[in-house]
Image (cartoon, rainbow, N blue to C red; front, side, top):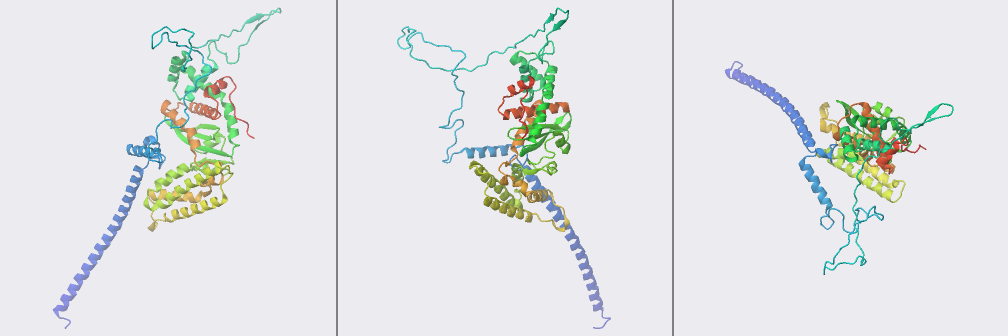
Length: 499
């Protein structure tokens, strides 16, 4: 075919058109590929967002730090059904409420020495109507009624007499300690006021109302506040002794919660054991609060806490982590399908180890058997390795989304703090959870609900010190009124000296 053949020119033109079409299609394909990549990234973010929202909707008091009061109605119903299921007996019969068959009753016991006896003797026979002779005694049945006597204030007048001497000098007697004003309230009256404020969390005005209604004492709110302040001053020696004692104990529980002073945040910090409670009010949540409380800085024992960063700064102490918090975090992470295996496995393992520790304590053992420790530790390491493998680095240098960070941070914590998490397995004196600290701190939340915020830092401090005293004395089987009466008598109950 000749070079000048018109068909060649037509073919070349057609080829050029096809090449242009291919180039255009290639550009379109490249644009579509980039669009698909962008859409895929958007889809992944939206899927992560949906998963995050579903996780948040699924949060409740069982798998997060939410209080039970914030559980939705459906979750409360589910928990009620779960409690009902657990209450079913092994034979499928429903467990009766109240005292169970065969269990010893716990009602009030009859007094062997009643304060008053009232006899009820019939006058006529209920059969024939004849008059009954007083000496025809045939025994009796007894029932007792427990009531409160009418309480009226008891006023004691102290008179300091002045006597003259033959030398001409007049000497006046001195009043007892505590009798300083023309009219004042005695130790027990002040103890009741402090009890209503610090134990029952009643606001000042309602305390005044209660004292008038129950005891006939007309006490002003200003006097009530001064009694509260006096209690705080008298507790300084107790707080100092408590700080010294706590610092010498081998295991402590530590926790903190928020409160309010006016419109600003404050924090209530607790350091406690089964016998002692120290609550400290601070305007900060960090290390300054630890320094001011005076217990944990330099402490060398075991601190059980919830992984708050400030506790890790206590380098001299050993650490035990609250398993209740860990179990909630694991339950939350286990909602993600790719994380279920290792998270649910670790949760089951922690509970299994705790059951073994409880069994060892019941048998009077000093520690868990070393073979069990090694087996549990190996299983722990395997599950943590599975968790690390389930949380690889995202491709293409992307950052982890919220759910990925949560699961990655949790498994990293299990890998990094292995010894602290398993502390209760190696030391049977270390509790499985930090429930002790949380229970000791819970009354501060109750106070907030009933009485509202504090008006000053001094008010928060005196409340914290009074709660420390009342909690500690109750743990040592001393009633609140007796402990407070001793306080206002100048003889507060004191913790033992550290050995």
